[in-house]
Amino acid sequence: METWDAITSRRNVRTFQNRPIPDGDLEQVLEAGRRSPSSQNWQPWDFVLVTDRAQLRDLAGVFRGAYHVAEAAAVIAIVGPVSDNEFHRAQFDLGQATMSMALAAADLGIGSSHAGVADLGLARRILGLPADRHWVLLLSLGYPADRQLAPVRKPDRRPLADVVHRGRW
Image 1 (cartoon, rainbow, N blue to C red):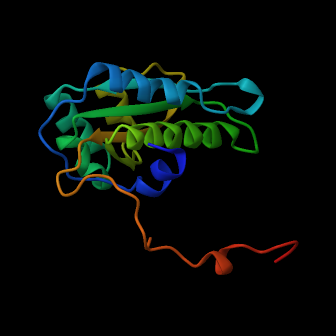
Image 2 (cartoon, rainbow, N blue to C red):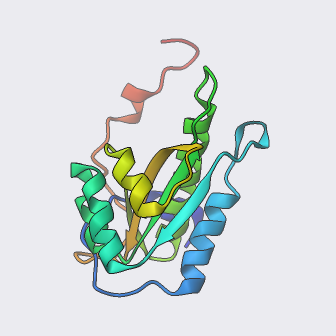
C-alpha cells in the first residue's frame, strides 16, 4: 500500500474477525513503533504485546471505551515513564509511536483502534508493569469484521479550509 493509501484507509476498527495476525506482521507493526520519532531520541516507550484471549478480556476492563480489546487478535500496550517535562514530550512521543503502528497495521490490511486506560492499577496488574512506568495506551489490532480497509473518499472531518489558518488565525 502506498503511504497516502495507508493514511486515508486507516480508521478505527472495533469489531474484528476471529483470525490471528501472523507473527511477522506483528513484528513489523512493533518495529514501526520502535522507529517512531522521539524528542531528543529519548524513546520513552516500551510495548507489551498481548495475544492471549483471557488476558485480552481482562485488559478490556481498564476503561469503558476499551471494550474492543476483548475481541482483538492482538493488543499493543504502549507504556511510558512516570517522569515527563512541562512540554509533555513523553505523551507526544507515545502518540507518535501509536500512530506509526496504526499506519503500519493499515498498510498490512490490519484494522486498529486506540483506547485509553482509566484503571492504571488494573492495567499494571494484568501487564506486570514495573513501578517506574505510568502512561499506558492500548492499540487493538485485528482484521476488520465489517469491511476491508480501503481509502475513505469522504471522511467525516471538518473541511480543510476550516482547519488550516495560514500565517495567523
